[in-house]
Image (cartoon, rainbow, N blue to C red; front, side, top):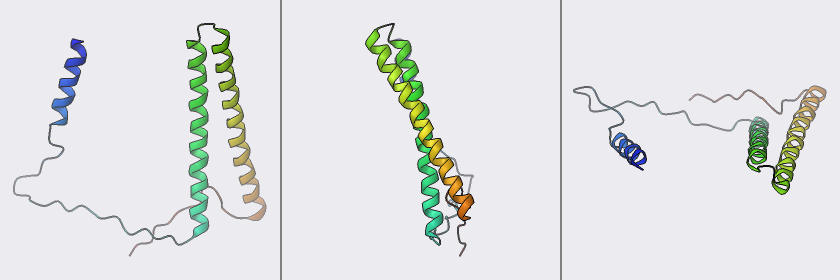
Length: 127
C-alpha cells in the first residue's frame, strides 16, 4: 500500500510541473501553423482509408491472437476455458487470413487495372 501511495504522490508532483519554459525576455512563441489540407483526389482518400482499415484489422487480429494465448494459459487446464481460448485463436488466424486475402486481391486489382488503391502517395498542397 505504501508503494502505491509513493507512486501516486510522485505522479501528482510530476503532473504539477510546468510543461515548458520560455527564455528570459521572450513573451511569444511562433508556432508554425499547418497548411490547409484540401482533398484533391477522392481516389487517394479512399485508398488511404482502405489502408488504414487493413492496418487496424491486422493489429486487431494479433491482439485477439495474444488474448487467446493468455486466455489459454489462464484457463489452468479447465476444459471450457481451453476450448474458448482455442476458438479465439482459431478465429484470430481466420481473421489474419481474411485480411491477407483482401490485401492480395487489392494488389491483383492494382496490377491488372494499373490503378493505386493501397499505398498511394498523398500530397498536401502548399498555399
